[in-house]
Amino acid sequence: MSGGAYFSALNTKLDAVKGRLLSPQDYENLMSKKSVVEIARYLAENTHYRDVFEGVNIDGVRRAELGRILKGKSVLLLESILNFLDGDYKDYCRALFMRYEIEDIKLILRSLGTHRNLRRIDELLLHSERQESVSFAKLLGSENLDEFLAVLQGSRYENAFRNLTQEDLSIREFHAEMNLDSDYFKTILKKVRRMDRENRELLEEAIGINIDLINLQWIYRAKTYYRLMPEEILNYTLSGGRSYYFSAMKSAVYAEDFGETMKATVPASYLPLTDGADIYMERRIYQYLYEMFQKLERKGSKNMGKMASITHFLEYEIRDIITITEATRYELDTETMKNFLIRSFG
Image (cartoon, rainbow, N blue to C red):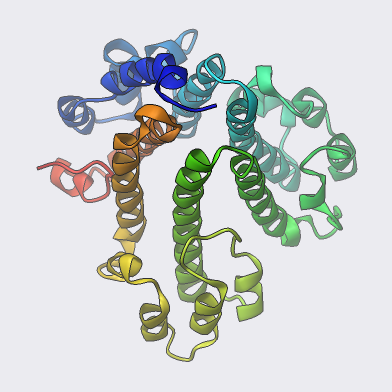
């Protein structure tokens, strides 16, 4: 079922969420702060993030902890959205929680690799306990990789860890993480393809473009900074992209002149993303996606477009806040900070 009546209540809530997002003045205020604690205090006292700081000792907040606190806002938003959905729409929304479970699984896996006490990272976990699909209490109780894998057995994450052993954990950890990301997008697309035609086409396009740009950035980084064989690079690309086809990616990674071949084979609409300084590439990609979701939002009064857009606007805002906290470490001035933000300032 689709149409304005069905989405009316949800869209009213989403409009309210958008109205509470940070203003340009909030951004300016955050960029004027000199420490992570000052940023956290401003957010807790003056913005819509105050609820995720309840019970938090702000004077003791560190950079990594702040990022996870803020991402909790996205989890809370998804939990509230579930109440407005049913059927295929609800199944799709539930699948989105995988993203935060995957982040937590990665964190636990890395901690196992460094022999860190898992009980100490409990407070850093992101996932929704209400939508938990695997027992994180048992994962945190794992003494070794075998116990960790036993908890995941039979879950939707089992295949990502196939053939992983304690002996090669440090080598294959990256492989498992990439498999988790691939499984996430496969699951999301599977849910979307069960929807009515309008929403299926709308969301398939947005997700496909997102996958294209993840692949674009991955290939660029892998060829520029990592010593990986072409076969390895292609093995870690995601399927389900919109217009950056496997044949084009293959041509680029096998080419002797990677840079020129990549520009010659990438879709024309993505070509500007490959121009300019490397350090701004990620920002250009997220700005491209931000603009895409702005267009999608305008189409979203009678479909899932507004939900997809507002949830991403919140994600990008959180990314910007994390970028600002990182910039304080290097004492960057406000104008320099703006060069790394997704939000643009006129």
